[in-house]
Image (cartoon, rainbow, N blue to C red):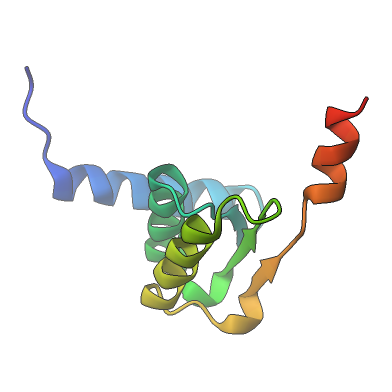
Length: 102
């Protein structure tokens, strides 16, 4: 198995995000942050690439199912120094309920 150079891989991902966003004509991004590993990586890499002032986070809770995950997401965003004005919580319960009952 090939050994992973974590520092080099991280820098490649950060550069890829910065280049892709810039080439698309944007300077800011929106990331849905669930409190899980995947979205935590996406948020951390986007913050490294663009700075916390250029990241907007969406928290998408569904009823009380993911209170712990929501707490982890908020803790991550605090550690990334994301301005509170860049964190939005959207209740997806109506959409999920409509989907379930369709």
